[in-house]
Length: 214
Image (cartoon, rainbow, N blue to C red; front, side, top):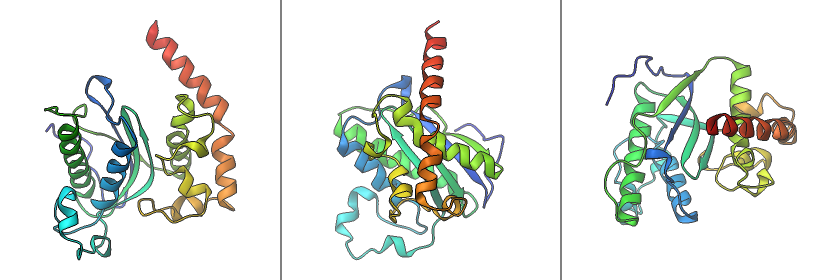
């Protein structure tokens, strides 16, 4: 794996993203999305553990009682790529986490679809989130992906992102929401912050596609 020129630092927040090889789909149906979400949850926690595929044999394992190596602030799964906003909680945590998530999911995907080889396009991308404004706008960008790409006409209809966790005041088993929600009066305020930019995000996506076509 190529050496990462900018080290991933503990307690810093990063935008992590990757996509399928040759832009091919990495999720085909609900079962695929659900498996990836389980993988995101499972490998956040520190300590030795059985492979996710073997977990049913170890029902006494209380994985979520262990400390986390990363925490996920936001996520969105798209048909051929994913976005995560991650805070690293221990040295090397982000690289370890993404490696375990992608290796586990690739094994599942290759087995299910009778394929071989890598599923994702090389080393994952990581961009430092270094101020509150960037944190806010990145969370909105991540959550707007499904509607900007015309997968849904209402963000509340998309079940494969952390957006519903934020606007419903629920406590999901993947997302840590406190950092973002303390910047808003209520989940409704965050919902408004995101949805106010729907038209703009759709326009930007349309422009991007036109430029690529040209």
